[in-house]
Length: 328
Image (cartoon, rainbow, N blue to C red; front, side, top):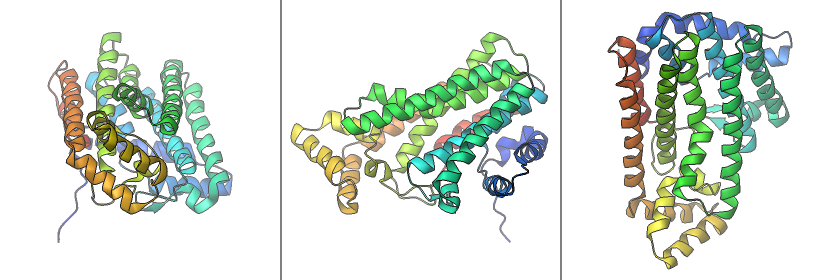
C-alpha cells in the first residue's frame, strides 16, 4: 500500500506540536453561536489548505526564540486575514470552486460569503486586541492596505492594458508578498527579536512571497493537475502577468496589436486564448519568468544565510524550494 506523504511534512517537522496545538486554537477561535456561521466555519476548517502562513509565523518565531501565546495570536491573525481575502476574491472573481471544492459563495451565495469574510477579518483583529498585540495590528493593518491597493492597481491596469514590469512587481508585492512578509516579521516580533532580525525576516518573506506569486502566474500558462484555476484564466480576466508583459515588450508593433486585440476582444474565446498562450511560450515569456522567480528564490535564501544553522532554518529553506516546485 502506497502512502501519500504531504509535500510540507518535512517543513512542519520542527513545529509539528505547535501546528497541532494551533489547529485546536484556530477551531476554538472560529466557534460561533450562530448556526449558519458555525457550519460555514467548519467547512472552512476542513478545507484550510497547506497553512503556509501559520507555518511561516511558527518557523520564524522558532528560528529566533521560543514559541509562546503571542506567536499563536500572530498565526491566527494572519490565517484569518488570508482566509477572508480568499473568500472575498472568489466573490469578486465569481469563482464557484477553489482547489477542487466549492467556494463559500458557490455554496452559500455571494451575500453570505462577503459577510463571512468580514467576520473573519474582524475576528482576527479582535484576537489581537484582546491579547493587547498592538504591534501585530500595526503590521497586519499595513498588509491589508497594501493588499487592497495591489488589487485596485491591477484592476486599473487591466482596463488600460499598459502594465510595465516595474508595476507588475509592485502589484505582486502588495497583493501577495506583503502578507507573507508580515507572517515572517510577526514570527520574529512574537518572540521579542531585535529590530534588525525582524527586518531580515520581513525581507525573507517579501522575496519568498514574490517568488510564490510568480509561480502562481506561471500556472496560468502550464497544463498541470489541480492548481485551483483553469489555464488561461488571467488572460480571460485581462490580467497581464510577467510572461505576457515580457513578450509584449519585445515583439513587433503588429504582433503587439494582435495580442492586445485578443486580450480586449477575444479573452473569452478558448481557441484565441490558447493561441496567445502558445505565442507567449514561443517567445520566451515562460523562461524569462522562471529565471526571475529563481532570482527571488536566491534572494530569500541569501537572507536566511544571515542566521545560524538549525533544523528550523533547514525547514525554511525547504519551504523556499517547495514554493517554486509545487504543482498547485
